[in-house]
Length: 634
Figure (spheres, one colour):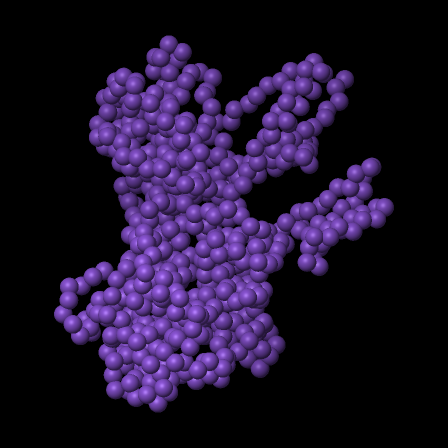
C-alpha cells in the first residue's frame, strides 16, 4: 500500500488501484474511504474467496495468502460456513498406518496415476452422464476427470488422458493404480496397458484405503460440488458442470503461483455480451446468465442461459457475485444420489465394509447464526434491558452469531438439546444455575403448545391477542399466495413475565418473532449491520450536559423494529394459533421488519436516522450512531 501526499490532498493506493482519497482540513488530512470500501470489500472478503474457490478450506486460503497467491485478501481466522458444515460432514479420520506412510512415499513418483470411478449420480443431466472417472498424478496431485454414460467408457477415457498427459505435460505414465472393478479388469484395458507398457496395480477387494488418493480426491470433488450447488440453489441436475468446475479449481489452487483474477463464484448471476451478428440494432447487447465454470478449449467462461437452458461460451462477462443467484428447486431433485457399485463387482465374496464415503445428515450439526441458547424450558438471557415498571424474564434469547458451540442435554420434560456460545459459557452457566435453583411454580411457558396447557392460559392468550393487534396496526404483513420458487421462513412466540420489585406478576407479554436463522443471505436479506453507540460518545454527551447544566433524558420506542421497512421479498409462515381460517395455506409477505429478521435492526436504524436528519440533526463522523443538533433559544 502506498500513500502520496501534497499540501492539499493525499491518495492511498493498493496494487495500483486507488482505495482512498483525502483532503486537508486545518492541520489534519481527512480520508474519504466510502468509495474504496465499496469497490474493494468484495476483493478483500475472505468469505467471497472461499466461495469463488469452490468452498476451499480456510486453512488453504490462509496458506495461499501467506504464500502471496491471493493478493489483496486479508488472512482471517477460520469461521463456520453453513454450506460446508452441511455438505462436508464426515467421520473422524483414522490414525496414519505404515501402509499410509508407504503410499505417501511412493507418491514421489511422477509416473504413477491413481484412478477411480464415481457414480452412478442422480439426477442425470441433459447430457445423460451418470459417472465420473478421475485420474490423479501421484506426485503433483493434478486431477483430470471425464464424465461417462456408463462404466465401460473408462478405457476410452484413459486413452484420452494418456494422450493429453504426453502432449501437454510430457509425462509418460508407467503405473495405473485402481480397484478391482470390471471397468479396469477387462481385455480392452489390459491390451491398452500392454501397448503403452503400463503396469496395473489393483487394491485388495473391499480395501479402498489402498487407493486412498483417488478415493479422497473423489470425496473432495463431491464435497465441493455439494457446496456449490447448495449455495447457488441450482438444480441438482447441474452436478456434472459443478464437479468439472471443482476439478479446475482444485488444480488451480495448488499451482505454485496461480492467477486467480478470473475466478468467480459458481452459480452466480452474470451478464454475457451478445455479438453483433446475433442481434439487431434495438436488441439488448447483453443477456442474463448463470456462471457454470471455465471453458476447456477457449479462454472464456462457460455460462447457462436460463431462458432456454443453452450453454453460452463468452469472454465478455459482467458478474454480480454478491449476492449469488438462487434458482428454483424441484421437490424430487433435492439430493444428489451417489451409488457406489464397486463392491458388487469385486471378485471375492467378503462381508461389505464401509468404504469411508459418508453422506451428510439431513439436518446439519449446527446452523449458522442460529439461536445459541436452548429452546426448551431452560431460559437464557435476553438482549433487551429491563423496563421501568419491573423486571423481565425472557424465555428465549434472540438469534445471534455463533462460532464454536458446546452442546448439553437438559433433563427437563418437553425440552431438547440446545447450544450456546463458548464466549458466553460462564454467563450461561450462571443463568442456568439460577434457573435450576429457583422454585418452579408452573408459570413458565416457552412454546405455544405449553401455553395451551399452562394454568395462565387465558393471560397468555390475551397477551398474544394484544401482540397481534399491534402487528395489525403497524401493517406488518399481508396474506398472499407465495410463488413456487420462494421459501417462507418460520416464526415462533416468545413469552415474558414482568414483575414488580416484590416479585408479584404485573404483566404477561407475548412477542412474535421470525426465525431469522432460516433466512438465506443474498435472497432474504443483504445488509444487516446497525451501529451501536460507543461508550466514549455516551460519556461525552453526559459530560457536556453536566458542563452546560442541561437536562438529559432517554426515550424508549415501543416495538421499534416494526417501524423499519422490509426491502426484500420476504415470506413467513402464519403464526401458531392465529392462522387465517379462510386462507390457511397463504403466507405472510412481510412489509415491516419483524423482530428476529436479520435486517430488522438495520432497517429501524435507517428509518430513525432519516427522521432525525430531517429534523436538523447531523451524524458524527467518528460515531455513526451519534447525532447532534443545535438550537438557538431566546
